[in-house]
Image (cartoon, rainbow, N blue to C red; front, top):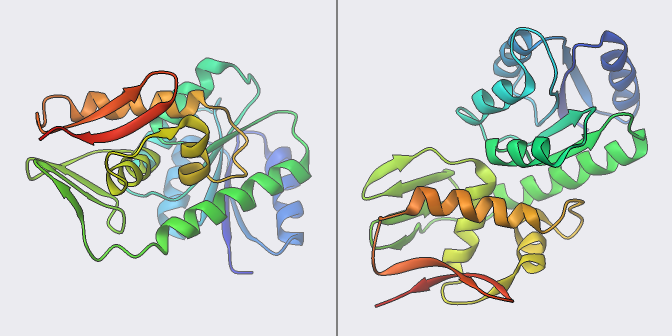
Length: 229
């Protein structure tokens, strides 16, 4: 296995424990003990997945997640001691792929890592020779790029994947559970509020872009990307 993990946590004991465990599972592991070191290590080693603690010195996990998302779609699993809904919603808005709460079971963490890597790999292998286009909007999953009226718009990877899926299936209604299955993967361990968070963020970005399509709520069912003309 050549899969590279980056573990960013201010507790050296946790980093050492995780490093030993995942190296025994065949991963290549780098560690960092604060946000600045974590970002620098990310840029140097280009890991396949990041395990990212929230409460850290210099730069916390939120800021590190935000800055990684400015340069890379690589998967991020946030590690939190709180487990509060606010933490999860904020992390999802910043582009995190999953959460795990301390203290965690190593087998569960390993399963989450494998699930997130499978989903990411499936998306990166998607053929995307043609960009999905409607009036004033272009979405490329291959480039992880959204353009509105010809201008690139910053967007977290999971929001883009959700938008790409809905636009690729124009005028079809999907339930929240179906979207979790298709975009996050059948083994996603979160709940349907994740979809609502991402749809709200997408609507904020897409507002006023065109009067010929809309990201629509179908009450009691779910969501669809609908063409109006």
